[in-house]
Length: 191
Image (cartoon, helix red, strand yellow):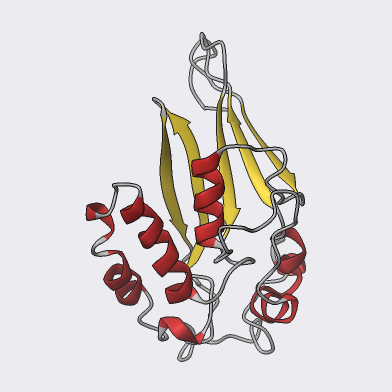
């Protein structure tokens, strides 16, 4: 809910599903984006679940969070006066696909193939500059989600980046006693 007057406030609902097949979404452009992000072949079956890159790797990188990283996230923006909500799909790149440069290449390739290449020219360099604590091929986690929203007859694409605030490379000189075994902040430390 927005923190504004009730007449302009928008309820925002998020739903999570572990279902990742294309059978329920016969939307060619959206399916091609999801296939590109996850490095799936063009003939990947519509009713098959998208495989995780590595159950072990996500467990090591994200600890107990790996259980909630499976599947897709849907966001419903219920704006006042609108007959239909805006619906955004979030594809979690931390769970599916390879390391950050492996994920970045098919995303920028898809953008170029769909006439949106010029804004992506600096994307790989920007990722490198944000990951000063490691080289991008050392892991995954800088890119967290790619979202897709149908807006004015087109797909509006956004990439979400994570700060990797608890990555050991960022904390090398400031590691405290609360972070001795794992780079993932566990639930019991949040309170």
